[in-house]
Length: 178
Ligand code: IMP
Ligand code: MG
Image (cartoon, rainbow, N blue to C red):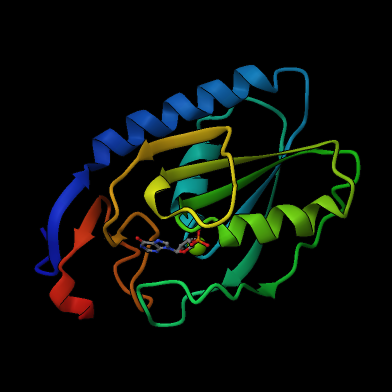
């Protein structure tokens, strides 16, 4: 285990099993459709890559990027779109793929932002959900794991751009960001 990690919450194998379940569920729910998956960079890139390979549907894969945290471990509430969506999503079934749903401010902003482009439907698939910290009402249709209020890194999630490459999800030692 990495020296800055306090506890491993989900191992590589647990993540892989749960991601496969989510993929199967989405495959089943969209069986007659060609959905557009929109990954929220950067945090979702590992989850997105694994999720896509467990989806057995014709589909389109897109990304956009937001930044909301800077190098802090708590949100400032201000969401900034740093890379816009390239694709036209009008009349398409959209699934927004996120690493973690925390205050909900990022996804709340994105759902409104994407909604203006008239998709046929728009749903959220998040790997992790911290419901205790919610400030905006956001309801993910697909959620991998509900987790306690702690700062998590690994499997795409960072602190100050580090730890994204850890193959597991773990709680960061508070001494690292105190
Ligand atoms: P929200 O807007 O507060 O819901 O935060 C969503 C974004 O904040 C996520 O996409 C993550 O990039 C980041 N985030 C929230 N909680 C954590 C965490 O525990 N570890 C790493 N990033 C986090
Ligand atoms: Mg993120």
